[in-house]
Image 1 (cartoon, protein in one colour):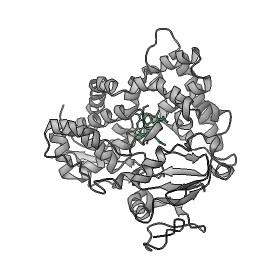
Image 2 (cartoon, helix red, strand yellow):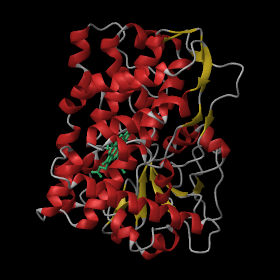
Image 3 (cartoon, protein in one colour):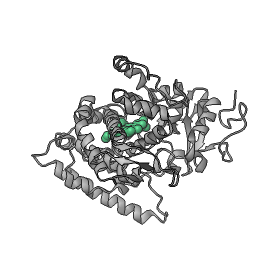
Image 4 (cartoon, helix red, strand yellow):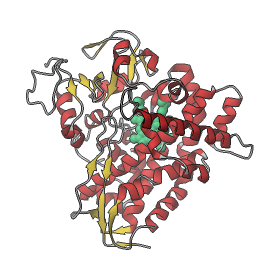
Length: 436
Ligand code: HEM
């Protein structure tokens, strides 16, 4: 048994650095390139670990599958930042007021009855049925982007396809008109990583915040027009009827715009890389369209875009899996570590290659129970939409690009230097011919 703080004892060769207090440093090129070595080592030595983020914030990282499931459903766990203690608050770069209230009162920062009420308003737009109904249009948007590719040769799939498709699909799903969709600047998503008052980047950060708020006000004004329908229009009406405050409305709009695209972009890239690197998985994915949705869940389990879940806090000092966690300390679930602790481990294989379509359907439920979309009250409401986009987004590329492969003449794919999310900066591919 090892020490829960230093981790020393069971296995001394550690693939990470520790700070002076023994906290595991969750950053650096080695971590970004292969976090799974770090996760595997941690899980072998316990399920709760003291870690430090690049911002200097300390947290308790939960890595094992059993512990992740328990933590995500724990009755004393909260998401509201107000539950964070002064020690966490001093280091966590919380967005300044008044923007924090206007942009950060969304679902991931709410608990209990308020959370349930807000969540109920958005769920119908993201049902499995709604996602299935959108599939034809998702395929059309994928095809339109692929139509713009060269007839043969290669390109970088991240900027030319994976960064573009999710926002188009999201706009359809929430009822964002094309004129406004065209005006969205992806750089606005960066405001969730706020910077301190003395940071040289601060003026730029404040400019992004101002622009984003002006854009959200425009989206809300447009959705209030009587002829508008769709989720955004329904949210505006809910606010007029008193079911949402103005801050909750602007914050939900912000959350939908950001949460609904970046993880899909990243998941498209990690999943495509995994398929290109695993010929047997790829062959099955390409030849059996009926098995694609199962492959999508396995690809998310194998290398998920949401590597670590967001902040959580215990309301009371809690003994969790042998570690005393003080109330208000930040606790983070390493979703990707928990996923590799499930059956299947480090292998990319959902184990259903010889199953018939009927067998595949009956076992779908079992296969979709991974942590890639989290678990418990904050389980990703966009999961069905994301699955459809991934199946069609990846499927159309394989169906139309003959001889699709990693471009051996280009720089190898590079990972974004983020701790919470996992995705590729670039994914250069080559192909013999584009099927028109
Ligand atoms: C592959 C793509 C996606 C992945 C991997 C993903 C993953 C996640 C995860 C892990 C969480 C919970 C985080 C936590 O527990 O701390 C979450 C929450 C959320 N996601 Fe997704 N997501 C994806 C796509 C989408 C899409 C397309 C939407 C549509 C708008 C969406 C909307 C949301 C919202 C609103 C929440 C907050 C839910 C709540 O707090 O109740 N996501 N997502």
